[in-house]
Structure formats: C-alpha cells, structure tokens
Image (cartoon, rainbow, N blue to C red; front, side, top):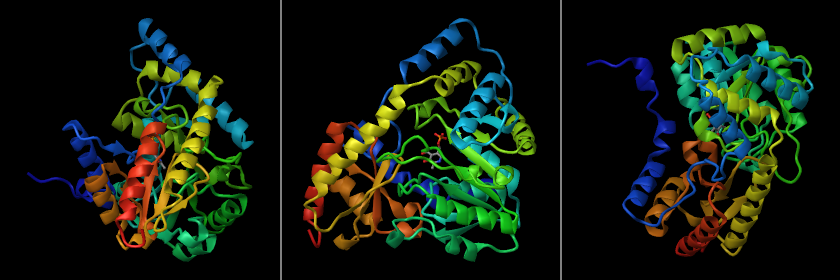
Length: 393
Ligand SMILES: Cc1ncc(COP(=O)(O)O)c(C=O)c1O
C-alpha cells in the first residue's frame, strides 16, 4: 500500500537522533546499568498543588469535551502571565492552547508556511523542527550558530539566508541543545530583519523559566513592531515538570489564533478538560518548585563540570539556560556520533550527538541535567574514565 509523500518526509535525521536513546532504554530494560542523559525530561515531580487540581477536577466529573482551542479561563491566565512577562497587551483571544509546545510548533508552521516558502532556522536546533517544516511542504533554510560565538546567533548570518521566498524565522531561546539565551542586541537585529522583509518570527520559549546566574528572559514580541508578527510558543513541560501532561500554547495575533482553531478542530478537538483545569493552577499559582528546579540544574551543572575538570580532551560549554549542557569532544579525535555510541557501549552512559541537531554542532555531545545528582556524579566519573582512554586523554 502507498503512503503519502508528506509522511515519508518526516523520517529524517531528527527522528533518527532518538535511535541511541531507544537503544539505551532497551539495554536498561534488559537489566544493564545505563545512565540516561539523552532526554530532557525533568526528574522532579509536578508540584503537588497542580496534581491536586487535576484530581479534584476529574473527581467532580470534569470529563466532557472542552473548548477546542483551550478553556477560556486558561487562555485568560496565559494572556495575563504573558502580558506581565513581556509588557505587551494581549487578551485571551491571542492565546491558543495546544498539546505541548510541539503541537504549537506544528500548528504555527502549518499556519504560516506552505510549499514554495522558506523557513529560516538557526542550526543546531531542536530535532523536531525539520519534520515540522517538512510537514508544511516549505523548505528549511538553515543558518549556522557558531561554536566560536558560544552558539549565539549572528543576525548577519540570518540576513544572508533571507530570500524573496522567506516567510518565517524560527528561533529558540533559551536554546536546546546549546543553552544560549539570546540578548537584546541579537533579538533587535532579528526584529529589524523581520520588519524590513515583512517576516513572521516564531519564538520557541519553552525554557524561558530556566535561566542560570540570575539572567532574565527576553521575548522578541516585546520589541517595537513585533507583537503583530510574532508567534510566541511556550509550555508547562519543562518549567513545571509536566512533560507528560501535554500543555502548551501560542500567543500571537487574533487572526492567527482563528487559524489555529481550525487546525485544532481538524486534529485533536482540544485537550482534556481536567488537564486544563490543573494547568490554570500551574499558570496562575505561585509554585516555588519552578525556581527550585533551575537552582538544582545549576548545581548539577557544577557537579558535572567538577568531574570533567581533569579531562584534557573534553571542554564543557557552560549553558546560560535550559536543562542541558554540551561537551566539546573534538580533541578526542572521534565524531560526536562515534563518541556517544562508544560511550553507551563502553561506559553505559547515554548522551546525544549534537550533529543530529545540526552540522554546526558536530563534535559536541549533549547531556541532560534532568537526572538525579547521584546519576550525574556517576555519569561524570564514567565519562572522564572513557575520555582517558581516547587520544588527548
Ligand atoms: C526547544 C524545544 N521546543 C519544544 C519542545 C517540546 O516541548 P513540549 O513537551 O512542550 O511539547 C522541546 C522539548 O524538549 C524543546 O526542547
């Protein structure tokens, strides 16, 4: 039987990036002591007040169809939080609730790009971006994030990638996998390009609450003239340790939200109502756990840096935010793909090769900080032991 060309396009480098993670899981199932640092899934529990809100909601029978593009009260709560965080004026009508940030990304690109269009994406980038753009039929045009700029974006590189076909620039700040958080100058440079070339800016901000060393998040939608051409994507997955709950959203112009409604109608017909009730508690409530998780990630980062300090062939790239860190493994003489597969086989630690995220990050591997302190300490020791067996070690 025949499958569509659209679906065939979704099998690409990004989907293959998970092969090592799948193997590590399989080995663990078979009883091997494998430390999983290959996925960004917070190991902390969802704050209890949010869980209680869900249980109460289900118990009182809140189990019928909900509003397709999100419960009105949740949309209000997200709009209030967004307005407070960015200083922009938005209402519930600007907000669409989606199944995670992933649903928001898919929806945004489906709404804005079509065959013949180009979407400019700085690389390395989150592994699903390629599939999302491919699904729309548009072409992904990548632009490098360079190691020598600590993977910070250079607006001149983005400018060089713009053609008459460009419709969207898709960015992510704080960034997975590099941990770079874009500053005002970089965002102003991007905003100028968007205004000059009449482009949309899709800004994936799922790590906006996870910034290290006292940094503050800046969303490009708050820059002059940008609210009307920005789609801001966020979710509760990382900030509130709610990856499995699948609550994300877009904040964008009202006309965009109307198209998202039609898409939601066609795909999922809304999120579970009890999940949305609990999400209101997450968005409105003060949950000290959110800041606490960031503090713990930063401690874990220090812990790994300590274990690797004596490795002359490894160099840590210190992240500014998000829940990952990268290690430069180029001095070992191995590609990041070979390094990560051998590390799994020889030392039982699963990390991802950053070349799966884009060619500019070849030679780097990504470790997730979402494992216990003990696992991270053990992983640090194993990585150091493995690196010592390699050239330069
Ligand atoms: C940059 C980025 N965007 C989006 C997502 C998807 O998040 P969600 O779980 O909210 O769908 C992730 C998940 O790791 C991510 O790292």
